[in-house]
Length: 212
Image 1 (tube, one colour):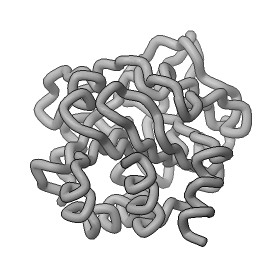
Image 2 (cartoon, helix red, strand yellow):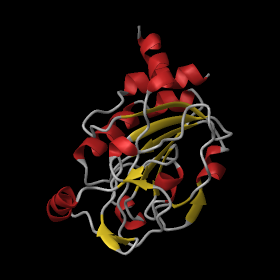
Image 3 (cartoon, rainbow, N blue to C red):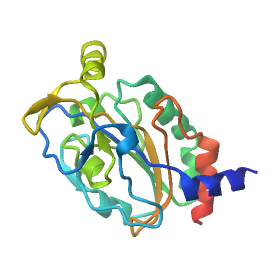
Image 4 (tube, rainbow, N blue to C red):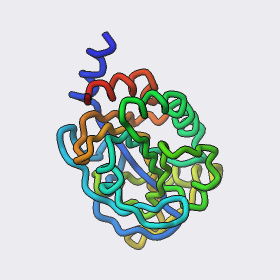
């Protein structure tokens, strides 16, 4: 039953990603809502994007993925309790994923400085900053928050407004998970417009098995 469910997810799951940044970003593909995004589909190769590590150094996502099969997790930010719980749960199965030959790369719009505050510290679990929305937009998954919602997030959660295309707007990530091979090809994807619903670590392990 678990394998059937995973295969169903591989065939029909919708990958949704969005992001917020602390500085201006160039718009190439940001949808008006999470429901309107156009994600990269399973079987396709994700575009290369330049991200930043915790030290602020630029890194190529494709170069990292070429080293070994990858679990790519996109989350909204360290301020999100659902994201923090998801990252912690994935860390519980980190060793099992490593034994299967995978590395874990978690990407958020958090700045490198914010990423350094994370409690996650592992050679197999890299945290990267997408503070310029490059990866989110390249995947066709970034979306804008409505102004009323953006005000709530800024005032209560500390999410900054940014100047995008001359307007003060906010874009946030819908959490997503990719399973990638070393050619950056997507074998599995999962996300949900409801940011409270996350892929369980058990299903993640099963998805990793499906790649092999």
